[in-house]
Amino acid sequence: MTWAELEKYASSLINAINDEASTYSNNVKVSIKGNKLRVIFNSPTAFKLDNELYFKIFDILNVPLFPILTLVPKEKMEVEEVEDSHYTSARCFVYPFRIGVPKRKVFLNFSSFENSIKNGSWEIMQGLNINLNGLTSIAIASSSGGGKSYLINQFLKYFKKIGCKMIIVDGKKDLPAKFAIKHGIKLITNEANKSDDNILSDVCDELSNLNEIITQRQNKLFNNQVKEDELIPIVLVFDEIGALTNLASKNVKDNFFKLLTRVATLGRQAKVHLLLSSQRFDANTIPTIVKEQCNILIQLGTLTTNQLQYLFPDYKQLMLLIPADEIGDKGKGIISINNDLFTFLVPTIKELD
Image (cartoon, rainbow, N blue to C red):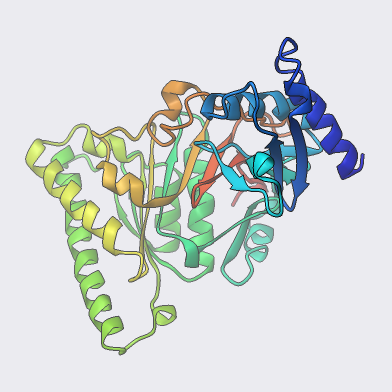
């Protein structure tokens, strides 16, 4: 199918929105330019060009254009100017897309996984890359068994490969704790003689140290004593942060939130980052401002309104196509990188070490 044929096909799909509005079929044109599908309306039109119509058109085009195109949902209506057009057709709805079907990255073993990381860049899914240079912090949400710890373990491998210093907080003693012990990384975990307040107090000590490091690095950067690319990245990793905060006393929790907020808001330039995971990210788990600093958001598992409301509150009627593959349903969801949303399939490593 050529682009012209696809544009004509998409136009016919939109024209069928409302058969009784006979003027509508002559008032819409679809144009594909770059990685954007543009729906251009000729005014006056019988239709109100608003959020409701924008998302209705998304839902109408989404499945029929698959697998040729995979539309990328937006949290709100996106409108652009149509250049060199008469004023009656000078605006359009815009729908970003990716060509083809999203595919999961599959590696034979961790060696092949690590060898795939080039110049600090990790192709986390076919055609989708992340790089620490563009990273502030990461939030990963999933219900139990959704693949959080498995994905975090891959992030740890990535951070280790590119030379990051890490501190790992894992109260469940899951894969991240085992990774820390194996590689001699500082680990804060649950011990028989420690209360929830004791564990969170240990975390607060680390956050205080990180805040001092941030201040020192800021001063050195300001005084041109060091360049940003000369700083060794530091990542504080939390596996199931909600288990720590939900059971702690108010005073300890308030102190933790204050220290965490400072690291989240001031750490990026000093190359101090957070990786946070939880079953959900409500206000009792982390402060809203911390969540807002995360420029990589991942939701794994069933994408219900209830699941999406914490990391993706504006995607109330999200319709995403998550293709089936030979791996199965585990490790599927969505990922947002700098507010661009994509279907997400967690990379699979066949032989774990």
